[in-house]
Structures are given as structure tokens and as C-alpha cells.
View (cartoon, rainbow, N blue to C red):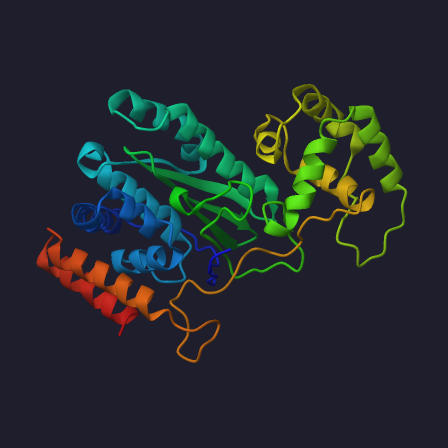
Length: 358
């Protein structure tokens, strides 16, 4: 998995005031316009899927580096910025926070009716749903998704920025189509959070490949056989240090889902993930059988990594990537200089950029 990061993101109450959001929309539009004109819409997706650049953009638009609203509000401002101008930008942004996230499929299909897309709209809907399902169910880290934005170009590239919440802390998940070789093996460009768990079931880790294959085969077994295995496992006295917990596994409650997986016969783990009704508990049950009965464990290492920042001058948590650092500064600086906004707004944004990158 490529370099990723964390930042302290305790959730703050309230929302961005209207006067700030309106300015974020204007500035976000001009920054996005410059990137698209200079490098093409695909480069904007590269930038959006980079957590360091995304966080820097949020700061330039007016948010504190540690504010959780930087995700939902920045995405909302960018969506509003390209609204009605999608053809000019070559880009569509669907989804959002809460109930708006559930409108993502209909927004993708509506865009397909308005524009000529090089990728089938139903495939984009599938990808939107699958990425959300992976981060909610295949990555069982205790964070419940409440925000999902699906970015896609008219040429077929796509990116996802989604966020989950646990207590008062947020975790952000970044995806980019051009960086993915497999949707079910290390697919993220970044998973960012400061609340690292001692144990987190990660079924899309490279180390979970063996478990994926076995779980797929197990899903094709008759449900009564799997339920019988689970009932046996519930009677085992596992050591406290064991990674698999059985206390939340209720065999009878997932028997109907196991009947569906048995009838549908998933060809691979991606197909299993995409089946309606297959959620976190079903996957956890299959992972439990795979590990305890067949000795094929999944990864329990939390996939979140270090800071949103560009590294540390002392080499911690990792050395500064100077090329990436300079590239981020230059793109933001050029975008701000060319932005068609009031001089005061431009000067304030440049000052915020200088504070970030002295």
C-alpha cells in the first residue's frame, strides 16, 4: 500500500457559515478550473485522491488543518463549484453527506443522460456502491461511513472521498481508479485517521488474499453446514489474545444471507462483497470459519497510517517528500494567482498557503 497518513480530527459542532461557504465555492471553482485547463480533469482526480493535497486545499479555502468539516464542506464546495459547468470541467461530482450520499447512484445516472460518458453509467454506480461497501464492511475498523463523494470524468476516470465516524473522531478513505490494480487488494490511495486500533479486520489487505479465496469458497457451501460450524465455534473457549471475537456472531441471524450466497455462487471475493445483504457480520463469520477451522487468517492490522502533512523535518513520521511538497505548493500557488476572484480573497488564500508551506 502506498504512503498514507493520519491527522487528529475530533469532530467539531456547527457548520461553515454561508458567507464562508460561498467564498469556498468561488475559490474552489477557480482552483479547479486552473488545474483542468493546465493539466486536464484527470489531474484534479489525482489531487483529490491525495490526502496531503486535499487537506492543504481545505486549509487554503478557509478551514483549520484539524477540522473534520474540511472533508464534507470542501467536497460540498467543489460539487457546487462545478454544478452546471460539468461539461466545461469534464468532471461530475456526485454524492455528499448523510442522506445526500444515498443519492449518488441517481446522480450518476442523471449525468449519463446529460453527457456522453466513455464508461457505462451502471458500472460507475457499481463502483460507487462497492467502494462504500468495502470501507463499511470489508474494512472493519469501527468507523461508520456517513459521507461519500464519487468524482468521475467524462472520459471514465473516477475517485472517491468518503469519511466514517467513531465516537467524535473521523477517518477518511481515498480512492483513485488509475492507482488501482485490484478493487479487493490494497485498493486505497489513503486511509487517514489518528485513532489507530489495536485490531481491525482488513479483508482487502494483501495478507488477506488467502482468506478472501477461502471465504468465497465457503460462501458456496450449504448454509446449514456453515451454521453448524459457527455453533461449534461459539462453544470454544478461545484465549483472550485471539484476534477473532465470536460474541457478536449469531449463526441463525445470518442463515438467510448464507442461503443467498449458496444459491448465487460468487465467482470471486469482489462478487461476494457485491451481493445484496452480505454485510460486516456475514463477512466476519466467514473470516472466523476460515481462520479457526481452516487455519487461513485474514489481516488484523489497522490500515490507517501517518500524518496528512508532508512529512516531518526530523524524518518523523517519515522524511519529507520534497518533490511532492514542491508540486503541491506550485499547483496551489499557480491556481491562486490565476483565480478570478476578488483581490482580498486571493491575498488571504495566498497568506494561508504561505502559513502552510513557509
